[in-house]
Image (cartoon, rainbow, N blue to C red; front, side, top):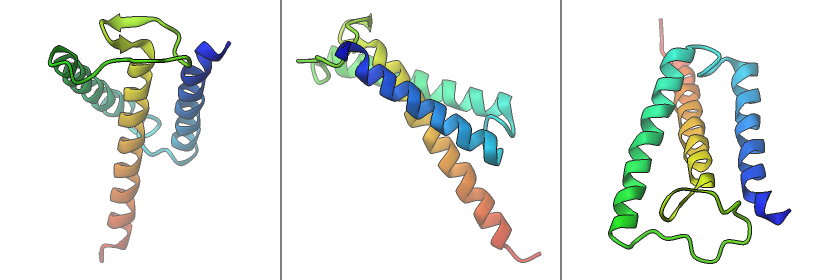
Length: 108
């Protein structure tokens, strides 16, 4: 059962970000098409980054008792996809929230 621990934690974290987004209408629940496209582009960029790192021998899985063992590509576990979604989504939420805060403080 520990083999799903990391994936479970990632999914719970993504769901938590989704709840924050839903509550405050920051990204996906404000402009869904733009937000999802932004996350998809970021994930694609970092998957290419990972592929280059694996090809250069920089990135590798190593000992991984908390991973499912499902690989998207050599040395790229399934959990990497969800980690990248989490990373891109939380960055987008932070960016949009800070932008809103900054705009609210601008004089009219």
